[in-house]
Length: 67
Image: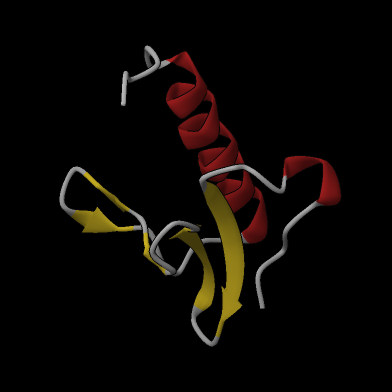
C-alpha cells in the first residue's frame, strides 16, 4: 500500500509500509528506491517520508529534458 497524498500524485517517490518498516518506492517502476547502492527499506515512517520528500525535491530541480 503506497501512502500517496492527492496533491502529490505526480511525485516520483512515495513510501510504502512493509513488514520490516517503511520503504521509499520509485513510483515509475514500483521498485524500492536505491541511494548510493543502498535499498531504502526498513526505515521509520518519518525518515522514509523525509527521504521521499528530498528525492522528489531533487527530481524537481533537474533541468527539463527535451524529447
